Image 1 (cartoon, rainbow, N blue to C red):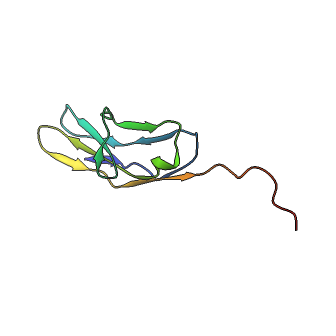
Image 2 (cartoon, rainbow, N blue to C red):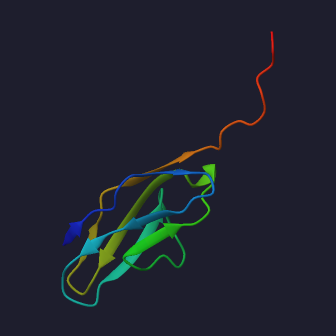
Length: 93
């Protein structure tokens, strides 16, 4: 049973985006995080951090938790990535 769902996050390009889930049930619990519909290799803990985010990291994250009884899927948490501010000065008219 999921007791705390992952939350939507907004991060600036270059920041880290930490997702976390809390679950209870018969041990052992196994975690697999997904980005959009693809499993994230090595993302097998109750938390997953996207480091040094880029605009390519914007999307939906979820985690599937399994044990010997069955599986449960978290709600979708959306990562919104904010691009860096434009540099320079606007053209003068």
